[in-house]
Image (cartoon, rainbow, N blue to C red):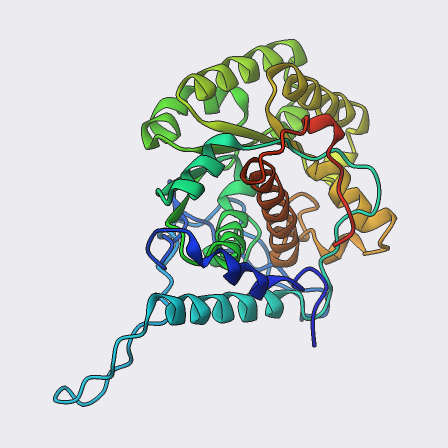
Length: 342
């Protein structure tokens, strides 16, 4: 059975001509990664959430697919070719992706949500067969608060999506999420957490904590613009991610609307991409008729495993489309790109 959102995983094998090793690095957490129970749509109720994220180790490494299995030392099995290992990798990732959406399909909004523009630094590295470094910078919804394990944080799921599309590319996704942060705190750790990694792409998720704490919009906008300027000066593509659509955020609907508009305005002015998470999640609830509990945990704020996985899937699709614009020699302004049904 082919699941919506996963109709194209094996078409990606056409990209085997990309140079680079078959393995992709596992997303790594900068800080202790929270592990928290988040009930699936039809799963049994989750245990009570702790008041603060428990101190746990970073995301475990995912075993490399296609590795030779153990056997008789005197007769070791033949090593697989790069193509065979890539095929195994794609099969493994596709199965994992299918499992998370086995109950609720992941579908993109069907109408008119602006998407990001081109990503020249990422595209250039992929075309040249060079390693690509992506930094996921943000707060608790980047760190993965609400997921059942680090493997279900959005940076980990994004890595899986890119692995399926570019099975021979050397891609690293670094998780630089820290719960409770917003623009003021993130600017203090921008150099060490982001710029020192020399990323090709920075996915900057912010704005939710600013809404919940009533931060001054003008000061927040100034800090965001300063951060974007520093990231661009370091030679990185930038994609902003706006707040999540969830009950706690919606309690401050007016403030949330201002923050969403602020981020989209800054993205246009600074010529960077933006992923419209708020509108995507609202589409899940209002147009796709998914109960909020399908994608948000009991705290009314953070996403669950399905929410992170679908968010990462759609973000990954957007990145792949944006990279494709460069590879095809097409320059399309971000404001004219639209989501299309998957």
